[in-house]
Image 1 (spheres, rainbow, N blue to C red):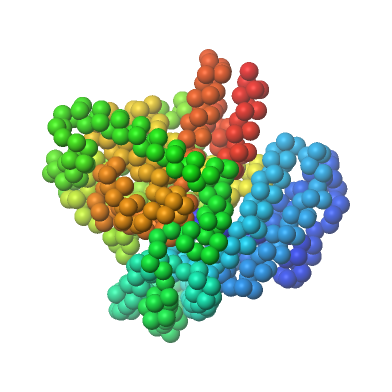
Image 2 (cartoon, helix red, strand yellow):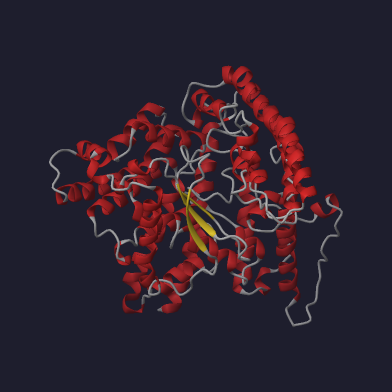
Length: 608
C-alpha cells in the first residue's frame, strides 16, 4: 500500500443503508427476521444489514469490487468525486448508521458485536471526512484515477482481460474516464474559487503525467491502453478480434487521449496560476482542523500532531544510535552522512547484473524464512503469491508494492519490485526488510487472511485501516532476526534505514502540515538522517505534501503492535505464545488501533 493499492487514500469508500434500495430499485431489508437454524432475530437482522451494506458498497464502488475479484460491475466506473455521488454517499452513510442502531447488540455474539462497533466507527469517520469537501482536490501527482486507471488499462492490473466481456466492460470504463476527467476539472475549479488548492510544485509534477509524452503516449500502438489488444487471448474469434481492435482504437483516440490532454491543459493553463507556493495543509482555509482529521483518520488514535512529532524525534535518535553501531561493525571511519554516501555509491554494493538476479534474490529471502514461519503463525494464507518485476511503463517512477490477490484464487497476491537498471540495484537498499513488509509475512499474510476469513462479514473482509495494515507490515520488518535474516550487516543497515524512513515521517509530516516547515527543510531533515538521494527524498516529501498524515500510519501502527507484544510477553511469561499473539491480531481483520488494543487486552486476560 505503500505500497498497497487496493484502496484509495482519501476516505470515499464505505457505503450502505436502506436509502440506496430506493435509488437502485431494490427492496429494503425487513426489520424483523427469523432464521430456520435457530439464530435469534437480532443476529439475523445484523447479518442482513452487514450483507446489504457489502452488496450496495460494491454497486456504488465497482472498482473496489473488481479489485477483490467480483466482476459483476466491471463495466461501471461512476465519478465518485461528483457532487451528486457524494450527496448519495452521505445519505447512505447516515441511513446505515440508523439501520444498525436498530440492532440490540447485547443479543449478539462477541464477533458480531465487534463488527457492529467497527462499522459504526467506519461510517462516522467517513461522514466526518465528507465535511472537509476534500473532493475539491480530486487528484495529485501521487494519487488519483488518472494514475490507477492506466495500470488497470494496461492489462496487468485488477481489471481482467480474459474474455470478450472483459474487453467490452473496459470499453465502457474508457468512456467513463472521460467523464471523470471533466468532473475532476470542475472540482479543481471549485477548490480554486475557495482558495483550496494544491501546492504549485505538485501540479507541475502532474502536468507531464497527462501529456502525450506521459501516461498515454503519442503512439497509439505503443499506448498503455492498447496493450490488451496486443495481448488478446488466442481463443477469441476473428470477428471479435477485429471488432474489439477497432473499438479500442476508437475509444483511445476519441475518449482517453482527449481526456488526458484536456486535463493536462486545464492544469497548466487555468489551475496552476491559482495554486499556492506554501507547503503544508495548514495554509489552506480551515487547514489545521483538516490535518487533525487526517491524523485521526490515518492513525486511528487520538494522538495530537505535536505528540506524534515528539515520538518521531525520539525514534530517530534511537535508530541513529543503532546505525552508528552498525557503521562501526562495518569498519567505516567517518560520520553518518559520509556513511550514507558510502552505502549509496560504493561499487561493492552493486552486485546484480540482470533483473532476474534481483528477482532470484528476493525468492531466496522467501526460501530462507519459510521454515521458520510455522512457529510464528497458526494460519497461513491459501492465496497464491508471486514475485514480479514492475511493468516497464511505470518502472522508472514506481516504488516496490504489493497487489492483493483474490480470495477465490483467480489472482495471486503479487509483490512488484521496479528494476529499471539492475546494475544500480543496491544490496543495502533493505531487500530483506522490504520483502518482510510488502510480501511475506507482511501485506500478503494480513490482507489474504482477512479476505479468506469466511467467519467475517463480507464487508469486514475488505476493510483497510492504514495504522493496522501498514503498522502490521512495518512490525513484520522487526521480525527479521527471528526469521534468520539481518545476519549480513549490509542487509541490517538497509532494514535500519527503512525503519528510520518511517520514523522520519513522524517528524516531517506534522513538521510541514502543523508546524510550518518548508518542503526544503523537510527534505534536508530526511537526507540528514537516512541514506537517500536528493531526488528520492524530494519525491517522498512531495508525496506527504499531497496526502497529509497518511505516512504517519506505518510507524504509529507498528509501535502499538510492538508495545502490545512487549506488554504481554512480560505479563504472561511462559504462557505467551507468539503464534497466538499474531493470530489474535490477524483473525478479525482490519480495525482501528483503539479497538485492537482492547481486544488484545481481553485475550491476554483470558490467557492469564
